Length: 116
Length: 111
Figure 1 (cartoon, chains in turn brown, red):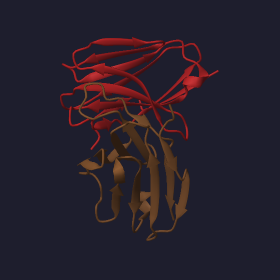
Figure 2 (cartoon, rainbow over the protein chains, first blue to last red):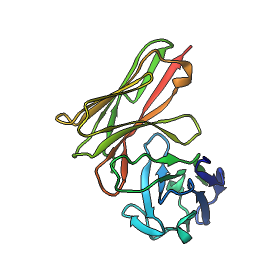
Figure 3 (cartoon, rainbow over the protein chains, first blue to last red):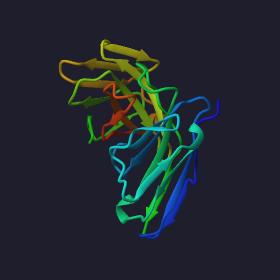
């Protein structure tokens, strides 16, 4: 079974530029998550999709971040415009379904974003 | 907001020794999970313990859960250099699968 794919692996941009990340979850996984992980901290959930609907985006800075999951498969996360504090690793994860008792999440390798 | 707090923040041991990491959380949970993150890589799920379980084993891993104290511990026995990584606890509060991660424990196992 192929894992969660993410691209690019690394991205360096200047502040006020825009950037987009792509994620392809494990086939058949209904739930997709985007996390932000700042150096030295644990991952923080930005947004959760169930199929192509948003379940939780309470911690997504909506003035600059947006995400979509068209057709309920792959997803893109966009930042526009980027700020210095957006420098982090952006992790995508998927799980078979949400709300289950045993909700193991499978993570991609992440995209390391550096904002200069 | 971070749900879990892990202790210690960093741990350095010799190969063959046991490593114990602790996690405390604030609210009631559905289950608690432990993940490992190697340098520069994504997180890998290690073990899940349900709120009605007290102890669980998987290979060299042993996890305990004390819901009265809102705490969990992860024990790695007979550690190896390959166990060097950051370990995170994550709590599931039955909010549609949402996980809240702790700050992590950075484990270094010296050969």
